[in-house]
Length: 227
Image 1 (cartoon, rainbow, N blue to C red):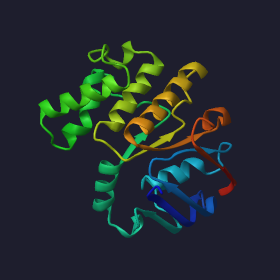
Image 2 (image 1 turned 135 degrees about the horizontal axis):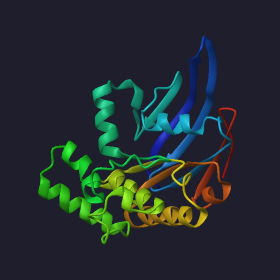
Image 3 (image 1 turned 45 degrees about the horizontal axis):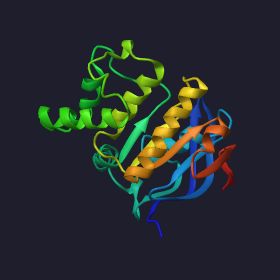
């Protein structure tokens, strides 16, 4: 039986905008096992990205609890949450957020250097993950010299260079054509199969979501369907 990674209970999130309260999530309950791939689907504004941000501790919930390996995440202080994010989570977004003045290799080295690893170690780790995502021939190319799919692969390499246990991907194929989008999904599946990385991907595309082992539909801030 797989280890329980995330246990979410009674999760709610309310935003205050222009003096009004907007309920993004209400009463969400879900479990995510280690080694799982999960597609989170729903229309724009349904709350799926808010859920992902809370799982990654980028956003605190208004109510409810999020347990990670049995530990209540939001009972920790910000320093502890920062350590959690840096050691356990790899974030991937719709836009790649690469530094355009640095090469693919240098972009991927950044998390290691920020963690005060040596230049030699950072370079070796970056080379290894860029090879893993099929970009060993593009190490010294700048982002502007890469295709959209290649840019997103660099972003994925950057997110996994420190060996996270979980990838949280928010519309990672949103700026890509369908064929390139499927190639990114194939990469997620390989990372899951070869290294046991847990993948939680938010998407509005049901076809993409079905490539994950499980899917959850969020509607009006609640889990409407899970399979």
